[in-house]
Amino acid sequence: MSEESLPAYIQHLQQNSSYPHVVAGVQLVQTHISFVLLAGDFVYKWKKPVNFGFLDFSTLEKRKYYCEQELILNRRLCPDLYLDVVTVNRDGSQYSLNGRGEVVEYGVKMARMPEDRMMSQVISAGQLDRGQIDRIIAVLVPFYQRADGTEAIGEFGCAASVAVNVLENFDQTESFVDQGALSRGQFLQIGDYARAFLQDEQRFERRRAAGKVRDCHGDLYSANICLTDPVHIFDCIEFNERFRYSDVAADVAFLAMDLDFHGFEGLSVYFIERFVEESADPGLMEMLDFYKCYRAMVRGKINLFTASDPAVDASVVARCKEQAARYFVLAQKYAMKAGG
Image (cartoon, rainbow, N blue to C red; front, side):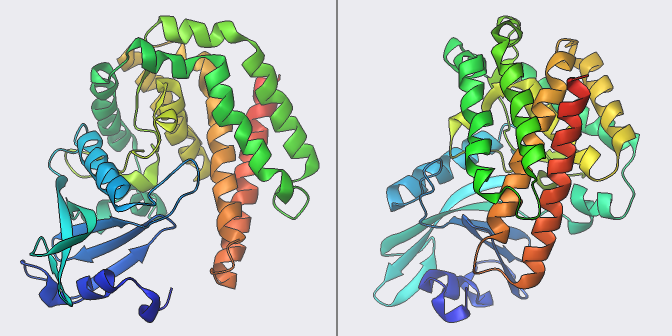
């Protein structure tokens, strides 16, 4: 997106003088759903007016609601990080942050975290160790113990509900089969494994009966963890409850899969073994490879979606296709392991 095509309020917020605090240069980072502005000691996140079906930010009122939800839900793990819901106002032709006039957009104000402590950076530097995994576990175990686990939330852990999330991956990736990243053989083997696992409804009922279906994080992997002291686990799913209401096993399987993907298989095993011990949840092991396979499929799918976006450049396309292929290989590995 060129500078000229950015919304007027984002153009305004790229100026140092737009903020009530010291700013020496504003950095804009875009995702497919957000504008993120790094400004001094703070981060301002604004939702794009998009509707993808599973996510609907199409109206100002909806964006306000989901900003409020983002604040509430993420304060469960990061009360010091998620500071406030803010507005951009327009008075005539003038824009202002939390100012006078018509509200043209709602956003979330966050404290800025140190870049070098982001888990993805620590992984890239090869500096991840067991001590950091222990600190993540120390945050996660009490979080899941406190998380809501009502009967209504528990319904999302039954086999039929889980199948909605798992099987849509195959519907959404079928058109990409045999185009370089996902072979027909992989697609069929992973799909057959997932469907067979879902047939055993009692596995899922045991997890529900044990109270393991909770209001979780939903997006628990290294991109959303900062290894500060204490550890900050941020950016949970606020836009769709069916991605957040899940078995605890589905949540931690995402991080375990992510560690496998980055070549930290030993730390992945350590993470799960220590988590199971600290949370007294040996039943998690029965579900682990199934949910790791599901998470790897999701990440592969997202990379294919990005690679197929005509707005991204050739280097991004190549990188995303390469990563997608690696995720699908990993998903197949889990399916083969579980299948004996």
